[in-house]
Length: 196
Image (tube, rainbow, N blue to C red; front, side, top):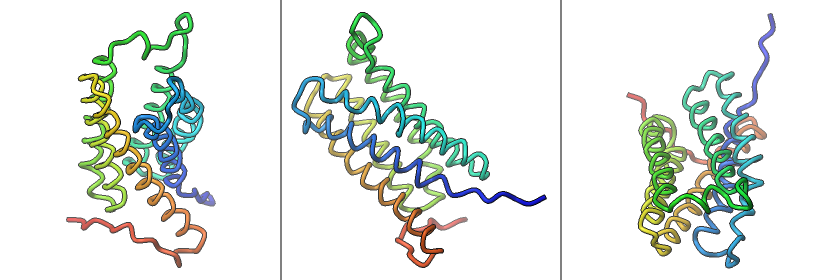
């Protein structure tokens, strides 16, 4: 039986994560001045950060990559859940409108815990991937503190760190895409971590 070659789904997952993270982080950093401007992230959270990343996770299962499957499937689900928090389901109000900022903070703390677990595993992959998870871990912690404390300045700082997270994810995605279109002749440094 002929084996079907499966393309590397990681650049898709990283790209969906990066763009969605970038747009939300721009809002968190305070670059979108309108009160409802952050809602522009919903479409991305549903389809690119959510659905496309979830699919990338499923394809990682197919390729036998448990780390990639867990990361992309989980963060795809995160973006779908986040979009659900923003949609006006309840008489024109969203869950975020109705929930306390403390509740949103604990939502973010929970994701920080998961990201910390994935960071421990990421240090066994590449430096580029580990950097994405390290920055994301910090982003979630800072945003959670900003939400629980109600401190907009802390949330803005979380937005700036989120922008750095998106840039790191785009770099990691670009490395994968360039390697695939050049038969490995173009290799951006991703710094493979030493295997013990």
